Amino acid sequence: MSKEREDVLFENLMAAAENPRLKTSIERVKEACNFLEQSQAAITPTSVGRYCDGRWGGPKAQSIRNARETLLRYVETRQGLQSLPTSPRRDSGEPVIHDETVKAYVSLLRAERDEAIRLKNRIIAGLRKVPGIPIDDLIGSGFKGVAVAPPQKPADPSAAATSALLKLLDADHLAKVGMELHRHRMRNRITGEVLLDKPDVEALRLLATGSGETAQSLELTHERLKALK
Image (cartoon, rainbow, N blue to C red):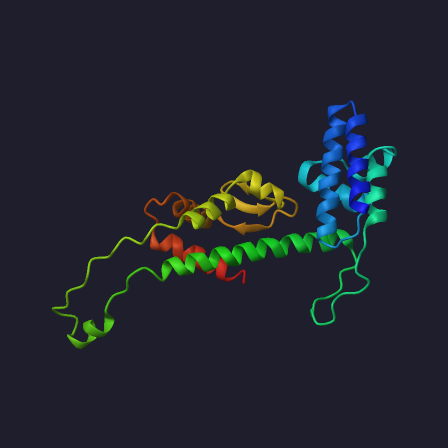
């Protein structure tokens, strides 16, 4: 029933809004409320305004409060329908975060961390397929007369891995989780914290396009992503 009430209110507000900018603001406020609800963070005009301001530049909290019959009405409805957990899980071992905006930001960082770990594991799996040098034979023969097999070209990433890499480098997809590519570096749009430096991004591009990546670039990406775990 609460979901139906929310959908009906959203549709009525969109139908009554004649200003295209107001329609856009209503859609942004709805997306912000969805994100906060999924993150189990309290939906308030302040938290919604901060999310919208950080991602799109608005509407800000004061603008939401001023639009009493539209934006504020929708936020207050979502706030009344929201059900938050009364206490954190005892076995989580995580500190209690009282600021709802910080809690939502932490949830976003966790999602980015998990995606980076999955990417690291895929890169490590690819590196393990690179053929090694038979060092035991080299030592046994005094490094003489041992035929070393020519290096083989590593297999190209699978279609699923290529798709994941391209998605990781897609500006629109990064924007959905608060990230962006700025001067060939991947960073958080709100805090400016750099997740991947330029060499890392270039190595990922080489993997995604399947064009002659170097061991040095891959090793650098591996070491930087390993530090995120």
